[in-house]
Every structure is written in C-alpha cells, then in structure tokens.
Amino acid sequence: MLSILLPIYQLDPFPLVKELHQQCIALEFPFEILVFDDSTDANTTIAANINSLSHCQYHINSKTLGRSGNRNALAQKAKGTVLLFLDGDMWPKSKNFIAHYIASSTHHSVVFGGIAYRETPPDNKHQLRWLFGRSREAYSLNQRTKNPYSTCFTSNLLIVKTIFDLYPFDATLTAYGYEDLLFIKTLQHNGIPIHHIENPAYHDGLEDADVFLTKTTEAIRHAEKLLSMGKLEVSDLRVVFWSHRLKKWGVQPFLAPFLRIIAPALQKKLVGPCPKLWALDAFKLYCLWR
Image (tube, rainbow, N blue to C red; front, side, top):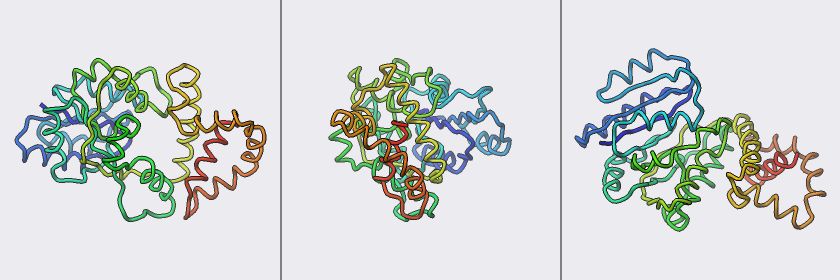
C-alpha cells in the first residue's frame, strides 16, 4: 500500500489531492492520501473537499509541530508500507507520476524524482525564488545520479516506511531551515542509498522576494546553531564553505564591512525585476557575518 503524505501550512492542496487521487484510482493500486495542516487554523471547506474523496484524510494539528514534526506525524499515521512525501505546493509533471514511483518502489527503498520549475518566468516579485530554484534545485537526472545525496530534497521523495521509522526527521528542530538536509545526511551516514529517476514535480508555491529573503536570514541563523551543535559540517552549505575559505585567506576583515555598506543595495537588487544569484550569495555572506 502507498501512503501519499502532504505536510502543509496555510495552503489549499485540494487540486493536488484530486490529481493524485485520480492517478491512484486509475492504477487500481491500494493507497491513501493524508494531509496534515500545521497551521492549527481549521478550514472546513478544504477539509470537506478532501475528506469527500475516497482514501483521503485532512487533519488539523492541535498544536504547531514544525516542518520536521509534521512529517513525522504523517509517517506515524500512515498505514502504507511505502511513503511518498510531497509538499502541498508541488504539482506532478507527468500523468504517470504515481505509476513511475510504484514501479521504482519494488526495487529501491528510497527514490527521488526531482524538482522542476515552470519555463515561463513569473512576475517580478517571484523572480528571485524562481531563479534560485531553477539554478540550485532543478538538477538534471544526470547531475542527480552523480551526486545522489547533495541533489536530493524531501519535497518529492518516496521512502519505505521501515527505513523512515529507523531514521525519521529530527523533531528537535523547530526553527526554519535545513531539516531536509539533515534527514538526507542521516540516510547517507547510515548507508541508505537514494535512487534517482526522472519523475519531477513542479514547485509552484513561489514566495515573493521579501519573504524568501526573510526565510533565508532565518535559515542562516539556524545553520549557525546546527554547526555549533555538530549537526552540520562546513562542507554542507555553500555559504559556510566560502565563509571559511575567505577567513582562511584573510579576506573576511576587509569584505565584511564592505558587505554591511552594500547590504541595502543588495536587497534592493534582489527584490527587483532582474535579481542575480551572486547578489543572493553576497547577502547570505552578510547575514552570516553580521
């Protein structure tokens, strides 16, 4: 049995649930779709729409569990032997999305199908998130196969339940950022292979640039804590890796004041119509050093 698990926060995932439901029904494969809303704010319309579909359940958490806790709660509730984690703002690229995962699950314990972004650029306020995603999340199958752990994300991931039960998300993480990275690192450290296939889902829930930069700042602060706790290593994060390199080369004392001066200009560039990833990298370095 396949358990499709959708962790959400203040989203209406009914169109996605309906699409997944139709694919499962067509396959005549035993399944369930569980949606756990971590916003603790009940939406009776969404609940009624999802619960009206067979083998589907919408649940409101009684308290906020966080990104890791919500995923663990979904897995604990799941009845299937195979779990498919799919974020609520994703959309299957293929009408055979579920069929491809079911076929792969017979031979592999962990399968990642990839992340895709729409070809058409979004409006200006969503440009930064779209550009970042296309450059640093939407890896080709060839790239993913060569680097199976560093190119894997939990927003579109199939995993056998017995494996997940052994290595769940770290529920002690309540701040924003890097819970998926730690989960993948745990699989890697325990020798659990990740099989990559061409079965992407579009990431359609693009945050506007201001929200994305706020989340980026929060994530970097969390990264510093995780590094101090020994849960992350310098090589795990691009910005931390380059921070250490620049400090080693003696550049940091000169570059840090310069970044403080240009930080407002960087932010203005990033929220504008033509954001650049070099500016985002510089902004992250500023956040790390300030």
